[in-house]
Image 1 (tube, rainbow, N blue to C red):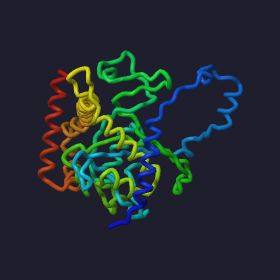
Image 2 (cartoon, one colour):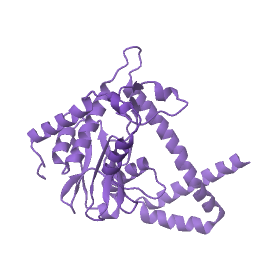
Image 3 (spheres, helix red, strand yellow):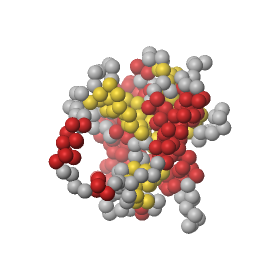
Image 4 (cartoon, one colour):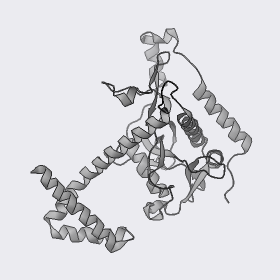
Length: 321
């Protein structure tokens, strides 16, 4: 068993620090509501930290929570033991070209842990703004905090961010964490889904407290604490003015909408492949060989995937007619 990184007293103190920041009530001072003056611009220029895209490294990861009770009797957090760096970490990594930050966070989690995940929508304070015109889902549980220019809403916003100098590249690394949950089942790890450089990772599910004690970086522990508090607020939130169960119900509905949108998007990605297979038998042969090498169930996988692509191409033909 790997030793805990911090003791109970440190874990309790860090939790109180993060909770205090989240609970803090504050207002924008009247003097700060005025337009920028020359002194303000001077201060901005003096304190600005500026990076070109070679000097800035952006990573995206998740704090993935499953509802299955663990040893602590409550939800569990997904972490992994990085054998190369001898540390417990949250999954994270750089995004691919043309990939959205949120999608990169989900993909990196799969590649580093072998667990396929999907978003978890949480009730939180955020500085994002509502779309216009506002939809029913957007405004159902939104509270505008006019005193500090934030909104409280159920959303898929970043739950935590950190930055530090990256030893490997020499760049300044910014890491953004999203809340997530297993995409299916209990979130068991599939070693075949790990990327080549992550094959030695040891994947673990810990209760919130144990995860916080194990993680090496204090900032990642704070990300877990933040997610824990937002998770509990979302779970326990109720709309007393109606029979609607509140934030948790809206979170589930927003996730269902995301899953439908994601299914449509993935279908559109497969259309060019379906047409390529239908138009050229040689392409089908090459694809079949690749499937056999990548997927463990071999011939059954080939039959399943090729039949699906043929069906998709026939549907596309009908739609175009």
